[in-house]
Length: 290
Image (cartoon, rainbow, N blue to C red):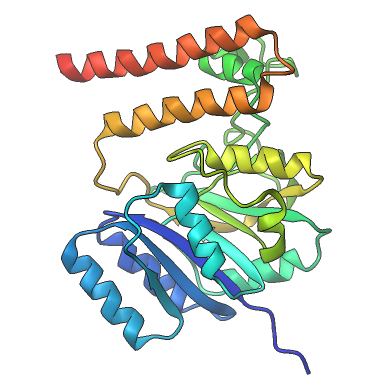
């Protein structure tokens, strides 16, 4: 009789704060867990010492450290390479699972065609669906519509539909979508490496959008699972907001040029570059004047 399938949960932590230990407890309480792999991209010395002690006491908790802050994408890839489970669940360190979540994800995955990626409904601290849970493909045009809120002018037009779908009616069952959130991504282990894992050219932000796009290009199906909700506290890492915004701008520029430079009218990409960096420098200016 074969052993039941198990899931490796991967989380990348950078000065996450106390919620990290709430996440750890919620994961270690799961049936169907192969291991929780914590990738330490940077935490205070006392937190590192505590995590090392916990890993020494619990064989299902693995702690990878000593590589420095290598970014979110590379950190997840390091964790995935160390994982032994049949499935991978990339989970943000400020997220909390409910009892039975892993078994529900594995049961759902076994019903779906391969390759595939599943994302649960992501809830904020107030219980509202976060904007990244389900999304359209991010194209230069879709980014323009979202940034300028053109969907408000043409609410019934398919051409002017939103990139983010969190305000749309919530489906009652699993639904195929173009993209989900990197805060919680579940898939068979082999499917993760179909596109070489996450693109390590991204340090922070947009790597999840790129991963969904790359998987879709290889024929994978991406699913939003509304029946399963994961609480995502969000913005708990001790990182200056302007640093985050700079990385977000760099990642957006990289994404559009990587995926659309050969298929998009070049002036539109140039205008997007200008708009992305203008938004960043306006944010810097506002912070200086505040």
